[in-house]
Length: 188
Image (cartoon, rainbow, N blue to C red):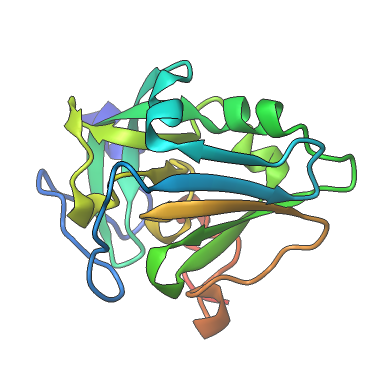
């Protein structure tokens, strides 16, 4: 029990459920027309179809998922592509220090490139062994386990490498840009 408690950030409660929270309605996914765009300060801009994305090296990561609203889901199994794989393909320029993640429905967030290159960060298309449900971000969700879940954007469509950090949807509304659950960085 002690080990489990050490995995729970301050003022979080463990749930076995996976509550659904998002802005707007989940988008429609059209497998044949969907694509992921990688742009900005990169040598090799990319436009990957869903089929091309699925052909990239697949990784499986089990991590804990912490929502800024106060719940944590332990041992969540994600499958997808390491963010580092996409970054290596795009070849960011030296001045690219941040990545803005743009999602469906006018949602965005941004993180330092250095943090996104961590081995536990991935672009997930499966959850607990099944295709990622739309309500949880399918077809593609960023997963950043060391941050509150609003940094793990659902419905990812664009990765934009930038020199300066851009504030995302929640960050513009007063939420913490660093979003560290262990320091309870919920709001600025």
